[in-house]
Amino acid sequence: MRRLLIHADDFGLTRSVSTGIVTAIREGVVTGTAAMVCAEGAREVIADLAPEIPGRVGLHLQLTDGVPVSDPATVPSLIAFGGRFPRRRYQLGRLDPGEVRREWLAQLAALRALGIEPAYLDSHHHVHKQRGASAVYCQLAAELGVPARAGTPKLVEMLRGLGVVCADAFTDRWYGRELTPAGLVACLLGAAERQCRDASREGQSPGRGGSSGGVVVELMCHPGEVDEQLALRSSYVDARAQELAALCAPALPALLAEAGFERVQASDLVLARQP
Image (cartoon, rainbow, N blue to C red; front, side, top):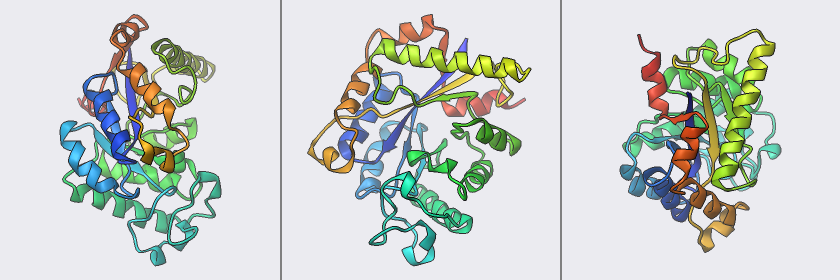
């Protein structure tokens, strides 16, 4: 049996998205989410809704698409126009690791100020893969002692070298694709098969030791309810409602079990690793 993390990005982006994420956790198969504290109005939304999903909220670290928590004058390498982050990852310039750490610690403090200790780390637009951010990200996960999204073999190696638990296989290929229960299961099976092939080529067992108990697969998703505000904040709009419907489909838990997937929370991976 493969263990499965289904993590919803963008908790806090808008109230409609965040409400949909809560529904996807409470009534669907989503196992956790990550909060973005730099979006306008996000912290109020997070404070209102996070109590409905205790222990399921991580930190969605940002360097794009929002306003830094730090004074912009103290993080100039992170700023684009008007004291804001760039809109997209490709617009990031050369990042100063010290400034990245300063800002991410400020984001962590903002989440803690809401009474939330992050259960997990990932990043908005995968900015943790960026040069100047990767090492900071891995070190922060190690300091917090929480699982983190990797996304590349190099980051798996970096995280595990610091004792951080992460999935063996990660997939973001369901994004904007066949947003149905069958499409989701097919996406997960593809990710697991790619991991087995890669491990076989490297002479490794499929589960490479991030935690005990077999292969761990992580799926990124973006469920949400849709309103007028969302269209002003994101180019991914109607597909969020399609994802939400698929993730809450009554038949999906049985389909996942038949395909050999057991859903777990990020905290379960840490517990499984302990002697």
